[in-house]
Length: 419
Length: 148
Image (cartoon, rainbow over all chains, first blue to last red; front, side, top):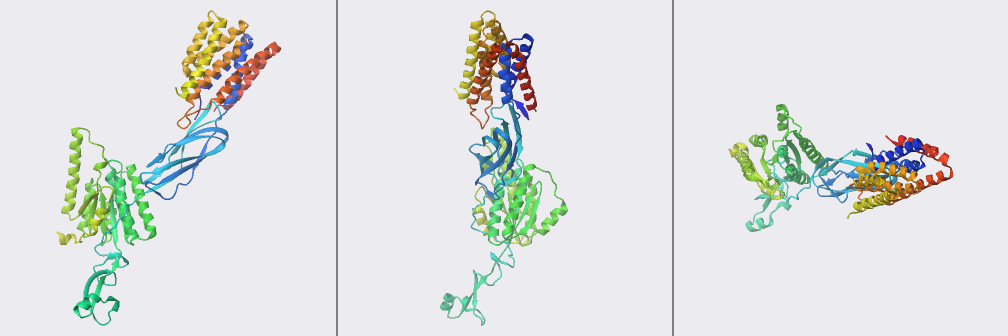
């Protein structure tokens, strides 16, 4: 939109009135007022330039807490004074000035330093631009929506324990299988039989008993972990609840993928997402991509009803031997029911409850305090329901390590045997 | 005092000084016109129209009283006031300091051109008004083409 600044109106009035009066009265004095202002108008009422802007590709990997620079190139014709302000990228903090003035001919470059604060897919934002010719009275105000999306990856906590599936798979990995075979984890001692390898002899046991004894190992195998992310955490809860839950999911997924396990992701919520168990180098990006999509859609609150057939297909796709870990703020009965279902059908199941009370602002007034107490009680009721279903729940805030360490030592029993 | 306020004050003082000078030279009822112009100059952007009308009236009176040297001063006063009123408004979130230099040059050029028109009138009285009208119309046409 092109508009005139405060000087334009006064100049036009003086020029027009002065010219008319000069003609009507023949007085040179009026012309002496009108002419300089007319020349000033000509010199400074140049049409402001149109602006084209394009954003440089943001870095492919932006981690929470890392800093990067948004670079925007602007182009126009001729000389111009261009004030540019970037309104900011969602989930980011602007470091320093969000914009600047470019006083140049043809174009210029804007650099905005940003710090990623919240994981997710964030639009590149928009520029607010005001352009005018040098000293000009006409200004061109426009906003430019920058194309592109910035993908901020959640920061993962370093974990030192793995969740152990009940029945590891056949491929070699990090979990000790209940069977006996070649491996490094000690399982038992047995008397030597002809054909045993000498390297498996237990020299200490053989020396004590004066008979040869063989060390038997558990073979290390890969396992499958399926993570259930409760996408309902954002509904009515403080901003950051879903972020925290997703950080837990990503911490566990990253650690297991690094150890060769398969990781699947089920995001329950307004728009369910399902990533079948995957392993390998590409799996990290597939899991992250699925996580980022959960964020993008949940934030938009798109209502969606999961079909019974879809739910059944999803349940069937979760391997029977997978360790199912629910990550939730425990504010959804539907999520509790889904987790209990996995336990009921015999999968080892646990829940990492994400603590969100510290994210809430201090309660103002007695009514709000009462509401908070009820809210906490509802969480307790859901934990009790899970406990009755045989699902262990561990609460975490920012550090997920103690909870995973505790879950890694869980003895696995089937739902039927524990009942 | 902030820089913007200082610029605004300088422009207003310049305009008021010219108006007081005009009132003193022309005397009588022109004091009232000068006063109206001063009120316009003091009220800034909203009063710039009153200041402009007062300037034209005083320029006509100066010509009638044969004190045409007052006209370039009136032009300098009104341009200084308008430029100073607009400078702070040109500042934005990122452009907190608008340069004063170009505005000062504009004020001086306006005074110079006004004096040149009067000098031309002294040399060729019959040609001045048609020439000035032609220049003004040409300027108007150029500005009109620059408008959106």
